[in-house]
Image (spheres, rainbow, N blue to C red):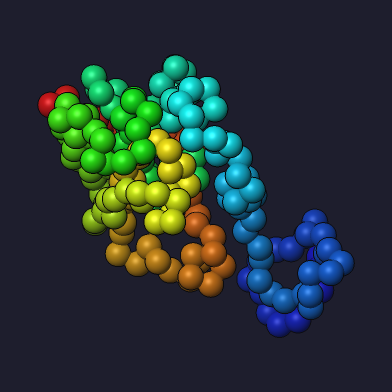
Length: 192
């Protein structure tokens, strides 16, 4: 057991100390290395071109389970976010590689809206979300991670979900694997 100052309720056998990380304290560390992949630019296209280099163009070519697609419609699809802010964080994406909301066709606007409504219904069934943040970042300057292919975020929210973890530790705790979340949402997706 590592000797740490103060009392700790945790059993720390097998915990290794690492040089250069500061003075040991009674806090355990929850590492989320998948976030570093996002920060480093993994899966981000190097150009704004459509095709295999764009993850939102590539995902629909995969099987639903492999691409984490929850539902497909004629002009758009709903997919789990690989780097979710909260459990059940989905994105609604038109198949067509288009950057700006004003460039969507009426059918694409309709499908994006319908899938967004259905996503909210499915997430409420699966995890009793108290509310949602819904939106799209239009352009890199507005925070779009992949600005060349429009996508709308559907982020479930619960009372108290902005606890100390994201505020202090800049970490989200996700209680379920994405494949399990996808299966639950696909099963609970409304049919109309």
